[in-house]
Image 1 (cartoon, rainbow, N blue to C red):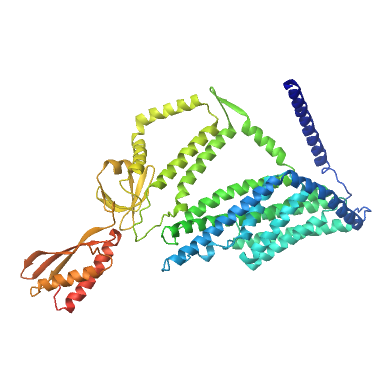
Image 2 (cartoon, rainbow, N blue to C red):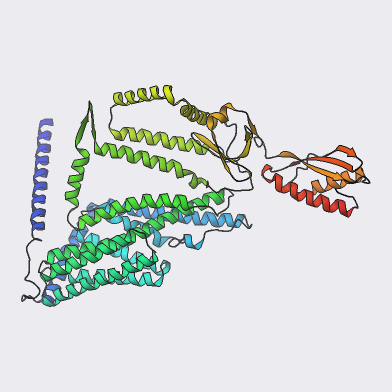
Length: 605
């Protein structure tokens, strides 16, 4: 019956709570064992035979961990499924981008078409990015489950060390690589030395010497990074922390607190190896995004050389914040402090606060702010993935349409919607806020809202597109970007003209390239009085039509502008294919016309 089912569910729930309390109690007792000294100080050695203890522990540990690992894999196989999907997705992404760049280079064998990927940009990525994909997966694998068995964590760390060593061999300078080999050797040596729960005198001295040697290695590694700055900046503070924890571990081991020494040592070596891996992870992801932008630009016929620094800076800041949080989670887990911090921070974020009649939590506020910030950054940089760049000076007038503005508006709309949901505010409170905004709009934000609405109208009406050559209120230039509030033009001199969308919609806009890129231009020529006008007209017309950048379907018009005793003034009207090449083409034609007229004996004044 339903009553019996409810009773069984209640019994199961109560038993689960009791088991959780029991686990917390046992963990508290286990952590309490780290406080007293398990062994006498090093200068008062006990009588434990280290060799027997070590060999027996290895056999017992292997026998105990084997069924535990098997059970963990059977219960958490979904983690490996996600890791395989992550590795396959990253591999496919990078592999396809490399292949697309090669295809573009093969189809466009010109000076600007080759695979323009500077070597200093790609340290880790290769056309077949197996090692990079494994690095991404194994760097993030420990964070799938922070409460995994120690043997499982050690296995993941071993795979990470092997992957990063292989990647470092081909990507790092030799001094940095040998420092990394020393860190890996310290990892295995310290793990072996602290594998014995109650070590003898020899093992304790060995562990102490290894801690001192690790601290010295950390110091030299820190000085090397300070001078060369080859890894991310957040590696250096962790190297100093590695030194301090090894010194504390050595002192704890000398005073007989072996469990404390083991905890400090494990935290130090895991923290340093993980932070180096996360530094490489940040670089790999940054390079992958750089490759994506290259592919998008080259597929659109743009040059592969562009300013990536602005996007790279923002991307690295975001990734550094993410990996910083992940590293702190792993660091506090190794110190057995993660659960404590999790409860304290969780309580602070979920505790309700009252402001008038509105109840909110700090977690909702932080979630709201975080989603808004991510949305702003995403709509800011999304254009890079479709080939846009701030230094886009192309001779060709590439019309990209205004769909990028629609994408940005969609991102902003979805982001604000999610942020509103995350805030936890009820619908009636949101309606009040929107009403207040309506009053503010009516009082002082008319121009801003006018520009926003005008931007939306420009998207769908499309009087011009990105890449069009337009003239507005005496300002002429190529449309670089149609923004949400304002649009940008690039003048012939290279300056950026920012025009509010309201002015573009309500003003008189001359679009020179609405249906095509053609434009009629003119040249002025002054010839001597003895000139044969028919011959001059024929030579000028032939020279214009011989140029590939002029429009041959419409014959040039050569008009007599004025006549005087000094000679003839001619006005030459003709059409060209690309408005962006007007000035350069006029200069080229003037030089060639002058050359041919003088060869024919015609005087050009």
